Amino acid sequence: MTRAFHTRNIISILAVTLFLLVSSGCGFHLRGSSELSNQLPELFVQSDNPNSAIISEINRWLRSANISLSESAQTTLAISDIKREKRTIAYDNRGKTALYELTLSLSIGVTQRTGEILLEPTVIQARQPYNYNETDTSAKDEEQALLEREMNAAMATRIIRHLEKLSFKR
Image 1: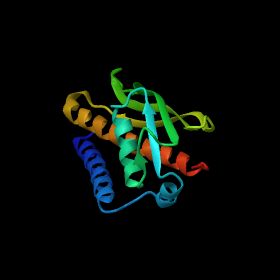
Image 2 (image 1 turned 90 degrees about the vertical axis):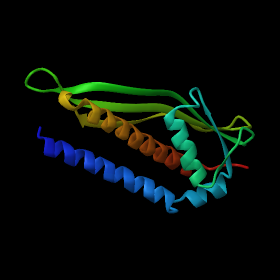
Image 3 (image 1 turned 180 degrees about the vertical axis):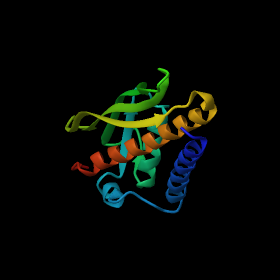
Image 4 (image 1 turned 45 degrees about the vertical axis):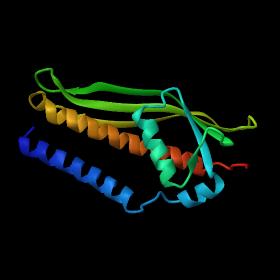
């Protein structure tokens, strides 16, 4: 793989990240988020790992959708079994890793304080392959961190979409 291709790859990833950061700060909201905040003015996000990056990202997306986060909310979004994996999916002609796949998976469920289950525990996943060059490990570490942030954002969007499909009782 050429250095020029690698540089273009990094620049493309940085451009997408910059776009996401700028668009989140300029008032961009998920389609349907206003309807969601009308149906679901507050929510409790419960997790077995509340300090994880994915939980922080989900909380940020919920706040941007004007949903108050409170332990006393009538509705609970339970997020569990958060797993991040990295596995080799291709080798080069020397038998060295050429391509990795990052996987983020978790389980979500939604319940009302009354005990009514609105969403049975559901596993969702995000996968992202990326090229690996052992001679440029610092750039690859940055690329992996960037891909993980993108996966967190994609997963948060999917969770919001699941919430938008539900009927909430107040």
